[in-house]
Length: 461
Ligand SMILES: [Zn+2]
Image 1 (cartoon, rainbow, N blue to C red):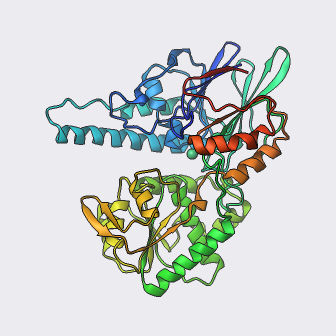
Image 2: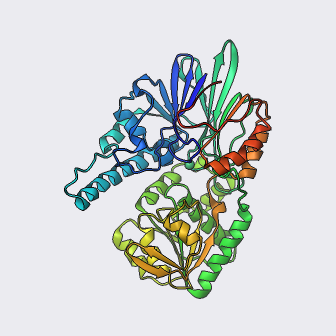
Image 3: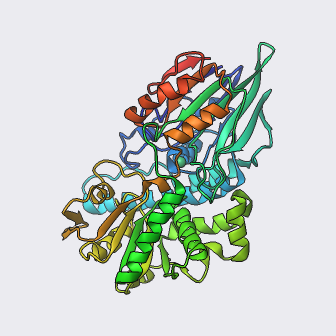
């Protein structure tokens, strides 16, 4: 088998790996690089392989850095099946329709700002997304499916976000069975909402993520205690809690955690507002897949069938609903996107809360360098939001343990569970620091030297 790494190499975006098994060519993920989608020079507009020659596309989960270029692949001529778990297929359709709409809007704004420069085309249009959606084939967890002659795909639960999967590919080479495993993004253990990542044994070739390869995150029980204290403080002071969160995964996790606090402690429930139309649509899909959750989470949901939307939780669709929150008195929680505060409604909420020390901003996910979220999490004295400067007086709490990614200890645990004896190991989806730190941890279970491939690098394994 030959594997070529076309993305997420020594960085966290653009996941895309090409497998060649006998005469079959299979692409794993087709993610977006974190660069401007309407920039004509963007890496996102180049494919280093011919889409016509692919036999199958296998998607690990529905985050944009894993699915964001699927409509572009179809636009460039891919006509085969795109495999995904049922929840991932549902979420992919919603995420990419939203992406097409945002790109159209970006092109329109570029034209308004620079009327004399011809605006570039979006990476793809809504009709490309619809063509792509037609190609989606739903494969539930733990049900092997032949995706090319003699090549079998089995999805195993990755516990990262709803529908997320570890990709297991079984095939024969020179008469002996071989197993290739791609972790996609692995979730944390013991998070209460989604199951722990599935254990996979007898692995011959492993491609693993490494986002938190150098870091141990706080355990879930400790995070819940911290969240309890933050809510108690808001009740005491009548303050607002603002949580920037990604629409898929983190928003639903924070709603779940707050609901759990209200259900299992003496804390008085306070209103929770989810202010993101995309997150609202995605939350509806979460309700459609009750079988995806842990038994404890399901038990809580059985007691309250409107779990993600009970009387304490309100979803804001319109701008008027969103604006109304700015003038409403606390205590209350506002969860809004984008997760790194670079765009979207979250900036308006921050603008209204930052200067008052009775309020709190809770950072629950990774914040990239130079983003507004990073500056807040570092506790700078003054910040610029939209066009104005503000004193940062609100309390800032960084609880990145709520992240959907396995930390170093979780990854070490998962490697151990494979039973070792892995022939070839590769690390992807991490910045160089965390990735290099994880190499010795994985090496204990791998016979050949663990590799951290460069972009478009290819290996015979
Ligand atoms: Zn992910």
